[in-house]
Image 1 (cartoon, rainbow, N blue to C red):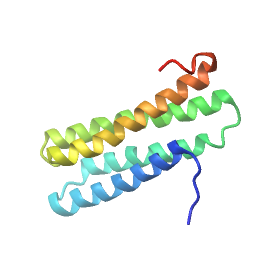
Image 2: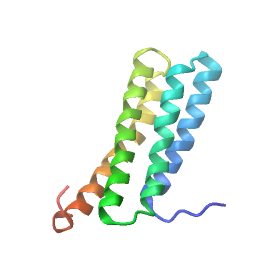
Image 3: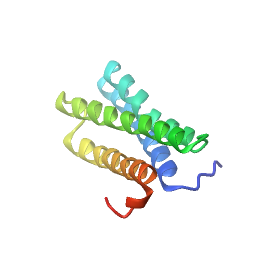
Length: 124
């Protein structure tokens, strides 16, 4: 069993699992491979970059790695919207998974801000 001890790492890993299963479902049921490949790449990259940020060599390195994870979350949001708009995701599927994606975006943004400006960490 792998052990993770912080919220962002746990949530991004769980999200990656969800993305893998979602992509497999779309590929199996809708036979769509191009968009799901993009979603799979960006959706799993969030957690990989979060994990890498945990071993950052400095505060700027941590911010840079977490900023890449945030960019991947924004890209994932785009692919989810596109899959919904083109009928590959139902509205119910979309609303469920996009909520998790937006939660990751907000969490990463808050961590980046509080790391850049620790004196303002109470401000959201």
